[in-house]
Length: 88
Image (cartoon, rainbow, N blue to C red; front, top):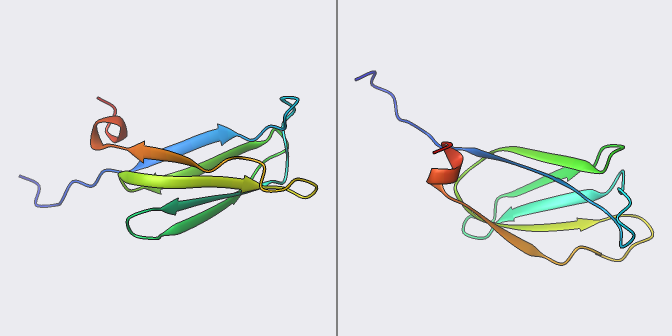
C-alpha cells in the first residue's frame, strides 16, 4: 500500500455551435455540480471548443451563452461516474 487515497476526476470537452452548426467562439460556458453547487466557467476557443478538467464524479448542469444569443443551449445534465472517470 502506498498510503495515499485514490481520487477520481474527469474532464469534459465539447463544442458550442449555433443553429446552423457554426462554431461559436467566445461563448461563456458554465458548469454547476447539482449536489455541491460548485461552479466552473470556461470561454470557448476560436473553434467553439471548451474544456473542464478535474471534475468530481456526480451530476453537472451545463449551460452556455454568447453575445447576440439568448441562453441558447438548453440546460443539459452530464453524469460523470467513477467507471467513466478512471477509463474502464
